[in-house]
Every structure is written in C-alpha cells, then in structure tokens.
Image (cartoon, one colour):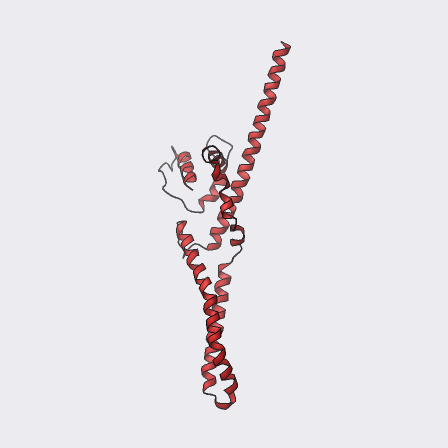
Length: 202
C-alpha cells in the first residue's frame, strides 16, 4: 500500500492533483487497472508490478498471505444478520409461549414443563452461536476501520470484492510484464544475431 501511494503521488506530480496524498480509499485499487501512466501505453498496475519486481520482489507474492480471501468473499454478512435476527425472534417467541402456558393451568402442564426444561438449554446454545457471530462483526468493523472506511457506510462484501479484484488484476499484470520482458529479450537476441550475420557478411 505504501508502494501504491508512492507510485500514484509520483505520477500525479505536475498535474492538477499535484498535492501529495497521505492515504487513499479502497476504491482507488480499481483505478490502478483503469489508468494509463503518462506518455506510456502501460497501466499503473503494470508499473506497480515492475517497481515491486525491482525494489521488493518478495512482495510480488503478497497474495499468498490472503489465501482465505476467496472463501471470505463468499460470506454474506446480511444473510447472517437476518438469520441471527430470525433465531432471536424465535427464541423470544418461545419465552412468551412459556409465560403464557404458565397461566393456562393443567391443560398446558406438560407443554409448560417441556419448555421450562428446554429454554435454558436453548439459551446456552444461542449464546454459543452468538459469540462467534458478534466476534466476526467486531472483526469486520476493525477491518473496515483499518482500511480507512466507515463501517456504517462501507459493506464488508465491498471490501473483500475490491481486494479480490485487485489481487486478480495484480497477478495478471505481473504475468503480462513477464511475457513482455521475455518478448523484448527475444527481440534483442534476434537483433544481435542479425547484426552478427551482417558483420560476418561484410
């Protein structure tokens, strides 16, 4: 991210956006694949990969640290929220049924006894279920804040989708750079052979 910031500030020098930025939003990741560098047919993503290859080649494999991102991007937090609300609503209704059955007399005696035994068990299970859910929600908020986003405005799904798209574009640009370098290397070798032939003929 530091390298991206440095790169974009470098390319913005002498433009209307000349003021050096101190940070950027996550949606700026997509611009790296959409923006061509000045006086070049290369997009900024190609430049980023080239810079990292020469300055910090170990960072070219940063995506290996995010192997769980693919599966994490398939999580739909809204669905989890809806499910948790439905479970809570069901449990609250169960408690109301128990309270109502207590005043029903002998007709609901068995039902009341069953609920009385079941509710504490259900409550314990619900707490077990809620704990990882609340922890996940807290971690998601922390993740959004880490990336400079407002948890009340930015969706978790947006973050994972943006990061996943960035990784795919990054890997593609790096592969294209390698192919281009190989092509240039082969062309240079072919020219050297041609020059040697000309020299030997003369």
